[in-house]
Amino acid sequence: MTETDGNLMKSAMGDWQLQRWPPTTDATLQAWDAADELLLDHVAELLKQRDSAFANVLLLNDVHGALATSLHRLSPVSWSDSSLAHRAAEENLKRNDIASPLRKLASVQTPDAPVDLVLIRVPKTNALLEDQLARLRPQLHENTVIIAAAMVKHLQKSAFACLERYLGKVTTSLAVKKARLLFVALDEELPVQRSPYPSEFTDSETGLTLFNHANVFSRAHLDHGARFLLSQYNDLPAAQRVVDLGCGNGVLGIRLLQMRPDAHVRFIDESYSAVESARCNHARYFGDQAVNADFQVADGLESGDSDSLDLVLCNPPFHQQHVLGDQVARSMFAQSKRCLRQGGELCVVANRHLSYPRMLKHLFGNCRTLASNRKFMVLKALRR
Image (cartoon, rainbow, N blue to C red; front, top):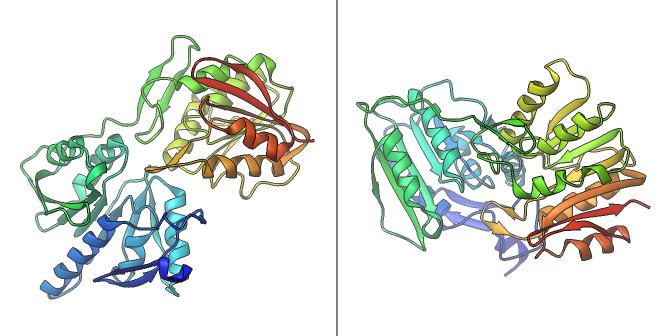
């Protein structure tokens, strides 16, 4: 099998060359799974039974663009919290010589037109699904077809409960290659409920009240790793040009600005929810017109200027969706090295079991442990 063959997805909606984004050399990681295939096969059967195609199609949480690419003739809207998911879909459309632009909707936006077909990849975070269903509900009608899909191992009872609470009764398909479809019959008698998100909490130790959209990591309390990094802030270097990389709700950058009001912080995350949460939290403490920060939905420092930063703060994830690994962190660290000036520093908090010290020493030529406890370590690497 050639590399191209390994990237070929076959379904009743056609054969497509698909690649994950960011690209990976791991041949076991495909840009689709059996749940995508099962969902596309079912849509193909639906289309055969209809006199015309669905007028308005909405895709929820299409991770690498398998659905958007396969269904491009239906001009679907891709609603996602991940800018990387949107990037993957755009790259896969190009890869298959499809000129139609991707119709994107960020998670913090709300569908504003009636929808005839809703295809849902059940997300890892049930809160995101709940928020999406609550905001989607007013745009559904009695003839809307609603189908969710997931791999069985990732399908939690809470997803069933959420679908039935907000939309209506759920029935399931038989499992095929460990994937399953959920068919939702819209119950128009159910009351339309408001989303419980965004939410907020007040941390008693820092005194910060933090606003969080549904898909923000640790949205109910301050992340323990972030708290440990905050405890080491007195050892941070004097810095004016700072990035909070993978910012989440922005707590690292906001606390730094409170301690160093002459600094400027760029908050960067690939999650629309995270960047909007950071923006709202910054406005709470510094006002809407503050000039000490800017906000960017991006794949890390991919577009950052070389030799431009004094300090990068980073609490990196060690997974992308359901896939564990260090690829995201490796990319963040390499981007940081390129963008730091000579003498600039990368400060990272990480779980102790991760091999980041070795990784940073290999990349930067140095790595110092500022602090550690039973679960976390705070690491500092200097751009020489």
